[in-house]
Length: 213
Image (spheres, one colour):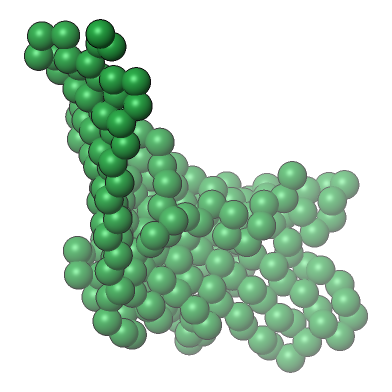
């Protein structure tokens, strides 16, 4: 089944990843469980037109780390759609995803770089999909100040106290780089992104369970 262009994207304010946190601790009959997760991610969209040939490229990469859990969880994604608009023939229509990548994204989100390689499946011919290798090397630079959000919630029910907090930061970015599918360079550095975002999240949860008396 073909994925949407950025179906794996969950970034800056909607970042949700299930990861193991610190184990439970006890104090008498009380049980306390804490979870802390940090994540960073970048995404960019490109459109390149050469005569009748239009190419749309989407890239995404993220790294998530949970306290007490190693190694970090990584998610990478590349989508390419290439169409001859004069003949209405689809030349490339596919995606690839990966769990290994290199993402450099400082906490200030002022700039960054994403490098990754993965298998790509081209569904342009749905009856005969073609698998090849795709590599991406994209650099990012912020174009505006970061927007920060912070949320905190508490609840108590049947002897269980739950506290959660989340802080996010997001900045619009411009991006440029290369995406090579097989031997074809579908994206070159002279094509600037039409949109892009860099984001980070810090999420904490604590559950305290006491026996109901």
